Image (cartoon, rainbow, N blue to C red; front, side, top):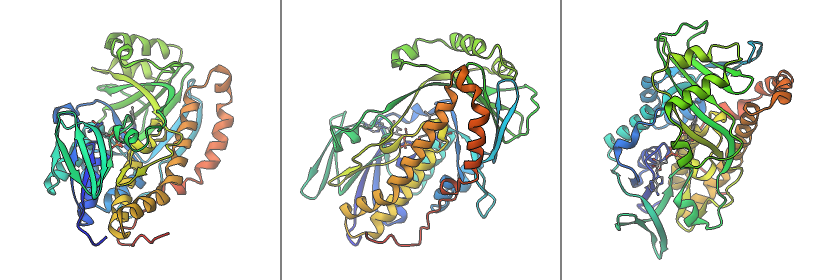
Length: 398
Ligand SMILES: Cc1cc2nc3c(=O)[nH]c(=O)nc-3n(C[C@H](O)[C@H](O)[C@H](O)COP(=O)(O)OP(=O)(O)OC[C@H]3O[C@@H](n4cnc5c(N)ncnc54)[C@H](O)[C@@H]3O)c2cc1C
């Protein structure tokens, strides 16, 4: 694009700051508007960043920063609750510089990306919650909860699962789909496990899914997904005390042969209280000069291990489209053409993985069979992990 653009980016989570850095690399200015104060960072959970997401970060010179905070997690081992091994998989091949799948706390990942965005000159404004936006003759006017406004040539909604931008673009946009699993986890110290550091161990327990990975220094990072058939409200979730969570998890794993109980006992603070959601399809991603990306457009169940990586690929792809295509509507259309089929395939895969965690006793008996099929499919995961975005290659129209 030849005209100088100014983008308003809503959301300072994962996609927002990375989009701002990608746009900057493409010669486009932006400001990030984040609803919360900076201090709201410390959400306890961790996530895995897949090689395809790390490759997207490489195009912006960000992968090494992230690697500095995370640790290598190249593979996983899945087992039944009684210890019977179901399968071993790799989380994709290494990048040319040896980078493999990383496990990192959300707080570290968000922090490192935001700090680097600021260091590169991206303005990030906190306490600015988008409540409305209008198309104008030459761009977009955003309105914030504090009564302030901002004008830009385009608006990127990177405002996550409960995106306000999504509803502004399409008032009939679907609500997120509830996936009947809760999320809890923690960091255990001083517990000895017969485990290889950097391998993610997953257990399909009798009543609950459990997973852990040992950091090179011996700390055990774990999470569990208790089944929860009906959606709990935020108030109901908040009312469950840490002691109740501990008791609930201990009870869920009481009959299993893997060391969940020991890991939970060695954990100081259990993080908990998230429902799981995804979006099978959000039909409308853009209107006029507004677009949604990341979880706002295609949240996937955490079971895909790809939500963050998809957000990072989105950020880089959108910046390339805005750099190379003749105008904003053409860039948005080009972006959707490049992204929709891929992200919907990832969401579908995440749903299947999540369904496996919520199986009842009968379904669980079929797990060895299911894993035989999955293991065959795992040899065909190139579409997922080998996806690479070449920053220098121009995006073509049509
Ligand atoms: C329990 C759990 C485990 C997960 N595990 C993994 C994993 O292992 N691997 C993986 O790849 N992904 C994982 N994910 C998914 C991953 O965290 C998300 O896909 C990723 O954070 C999406 O980035 P985003 O920028 O689109 O949204 P977010 O990171 O959610 O950021 C959205 C931002 O927008 C802000 N915001 C919201 N509304 C407004 C508004 N109106 N105005 C201004 N700002 C606003 C929010 O405060 C937030 O900072 C997991 C998610 C959960 C919940």
